[in-house]
Length: 136
Image (cartoon, rainbow, N blue to C red; front, top):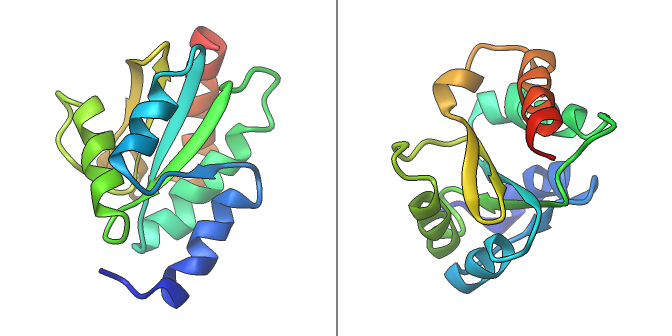
């Protein structure tokens, strides 16, 4: 587990634009039980989360269509919430960072680490925007 003082700025990278943090399995269940679309970002301390994933997620929200709900769990910190979120992401293997779009609780779009690592934030945002335009 990472110390809170280390991850605080990484959490704020998403919460400052409206992402709700989920800390428990019950939080994840409640978030994904909501009607509409929900983007779940599995945040991470890795460099590709800082350079690609979080900026891409933030940029994607500048689209006309966006998810009804935006939430995040933090790998290596919020173990229970991350494990529960990953259950909803099956059949995709666990990876962090990652992003999943759900519609009425059903997984409709997934970005795994290998879709994020080494790709610019703008490309990640474009990928998410395409999903928003289709499902939101």
